[in-house]
Length: 155
Image (tube, rainbow, N blue to C red; front, side, top):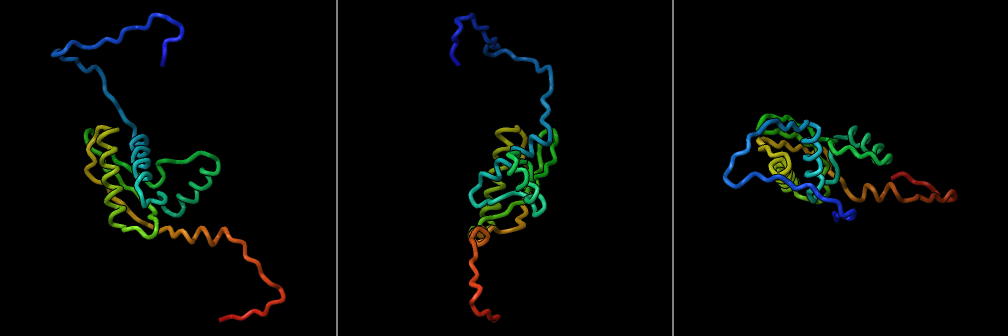
């Protein structure tokens, strides 16, 4: 950002090289923040259609309609001092290798926990509770025209 007011900018204080800086506080990262980061990482994996079970996805659809997406949907975490455990429930796209998608989700969440949270992901459990078939959406979007004069048959 440019200094448009030509005002004097405060100088950033940097510790001299070789000196030790005493830590005078703690950083606390709430479980919801960790869950949100895990959810974002899982959603970015190719082959993941959605997160959460059926009921969670129904509520998520309502939230999406209101532009209030819940990024922690389908994710639960346990956060310790230096480690984190993550459970995530996903819906996979068809036709992907379910094992590959699960492995990719584990890897993405592990990297995100390390890079963004600064904790080791000791356990990432992936539950695949559904497979999304693209034709499911296509069939529900089509309009069916019924000819009233046509003879009906049941096969």
